[in-house]
Length: 353
Image (tube, rainbow, N blue to C red):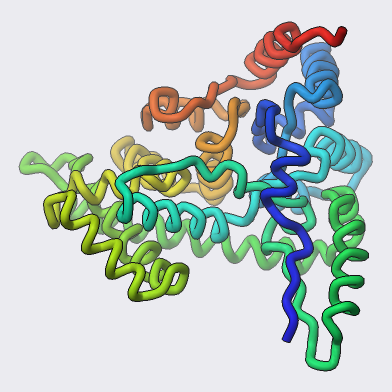
């Protein structure tokens, strides 16, 4: 069976995102820009278009952004929103969460082997049409390599111009909404179960929740369910064993601090863990929307220059996580923060001669 990549993430990055500021807008910002109810929203959209057309910035989409958009009712405003999202993103999206997680697990392997960590930002973007999958095609027996190559080239040309506007018009939306509503409910149930367990056992002597114990639980979960499950598949068992031996030579065995350092090499996974810790420490109620907030931030903050949201609770959570010290990402509070940031980067762009 012949398998071809339709979209190569590094090529998407080089063509669209390299040497530009990546600005991540969560769903409430996209909605504000589309509704254009205030002069501030109109001005922010104008500045965003100027930043995008001048090559200063790009505004990529993501799995949570596309999913929340498609779940809206189709009307004039949502169609306008789709056009704006496609224009400002230039049909670029973050890859699916599972694929970015695998990239970060590769980073764990590199860290175990060499003690060094490198950025993988050039591998985290893809075409919007591939925002869930990874843009590969499998051809059945009987198809020649030449035929497969011709078909792949043809489909690649089509896919790079498929955006959320097309998805909104062509996906079976009711089936899509039912499927992801079930996923939301499963996520809430899992988080609630883990929180109840934490209240029972992950506490200090005075009964208060213990941040170190909560953090260790998150990191052990990552080790068992992500790293140990996927690393042998990604690099091979022998390579994994060699990396483990090299790592043990440099690091004391079994220390929570060592495990924390390993998880820190995974930017989006580390942030996901810390958001869970801070939510549980604050005893925040769990809502279905929390999953999308979580997914927006865990992708957008580590891999973007700026993250814009009107959700003040989410921004406050991110500050409690210490993201402004860990990542080179500016948190923008709503349209005022976005407008100010865009004005700054547009004014600072080099003048063509």
